[in-house]
Length: 165
Image 1 (cartoon, rainbow, N blue to C red):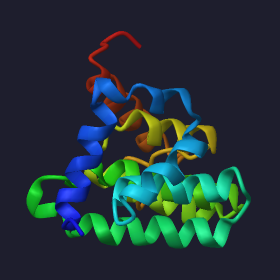
Image 2: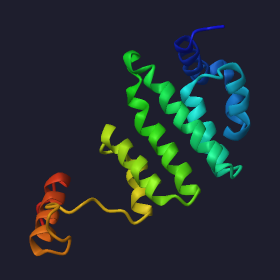
Image 3: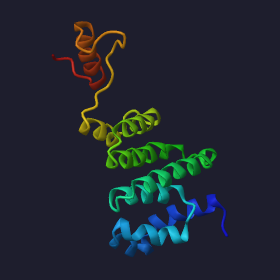
């Protein structure tokens, strides 16, 4: 049996190999079990499998467990430079929690993903869709405090590069 790292690398090769374009004609829901039979320990595949178990099949507890296990497996690959995948894994886990109606857990995992990539548009979009905003500029003051309001506007404009009010 190949090592986990070898399996993980083979999946990326397999998924990007132009000779295997027929895999793209299958839905992700159909393709994942086929890929998992070849690469059962692959954290990337398992993360998406857990997401689909929860969102497509409604098996939320199983989806959470699979996504959490995928995160643990990914930690084994940190020394190979795969930590850039953490936002994606936390995005999938957050979506699983969201589909289960566990908004607090979803937000917690989306924020963990943002800790690795603060500009991740998919995670930011999920949070925005949930009505979640960034915390106030000065956390000890109320959000509606004029100091927080104007400092927040200023910081947003400075970050986006616009100078007009």
